[in-house]
Length: 300
Ligand code: ADP
Image 1 (cartoon, rainbow, N blue to C red):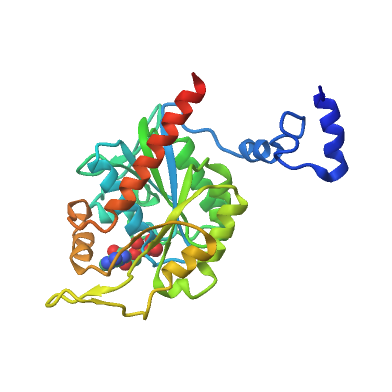
Image 2: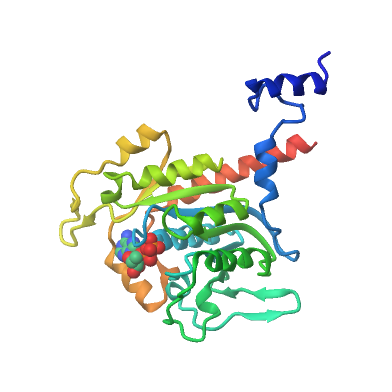
């Protein structure tokens, strides 16, 4: 039988692949070094699934999609939290009408909760003035996000959604490296789809070896309030082409919906009744239930 030592020798010949060196000293080296960078979750927290919501740039509705999925999974009975990692453009607390400040205890920072019991942590819950600009350099922004992971007492959650900093720069990269994400969702607008932006977000996740759960196209169309016709204001959607090209699922398409905008403005986002992401929420809960099931049978 081939020994680990022998396998190790063949690896140093430069022929090492993750499959070929299974069981040898180099096995899963990249995985180990990746895990070494992870920050420890707050000791009073236990989170089953961590999902990052990313976009190539700001303003495409990343927070909107994060909040909508969080509400839909909460409605399905899951325990849900939202970590607002978009430090320079935090919008989650406002959407849920939270303007109280987060409190600290000897256990850590206590997140705020929405009317329906979704836990929320955001820089806006720490600032004296909600509209004060956050003029911090990259490393400080990234450290704040890490602290939301290490010092916030999330307690038991089925899902933690992370509203990621937009783009593919320094801050999102640090978040990718410090928090063990179980999957990411890429949010785009129809205009993004014709550019390189989506592919950049896609390649970043691939390079970090994080599973991509799928693509959500936001602001895809508007519905005529009189006849119900869908109007593609940005022209024909390229969503199917791009999803096929890079080989990822489409989780949903959301129109520009003035009714939801009004709810956002009133801080009553949780009351929306539209079902644009219902299938996406269903897919996510099925996927993670299957994973839990296979982890359980693997352990037995
Ligand atoms: P991002 O997180 O990508 O910067 P946001 O989610 O904050 O973007 O969205 C930017 C603005 O557009 C917000 O005011 C949000 O309420 C609004 N918005 C986003 N998506 C929609 C939509 N589908 N219909 C109506 N308003 C939307």
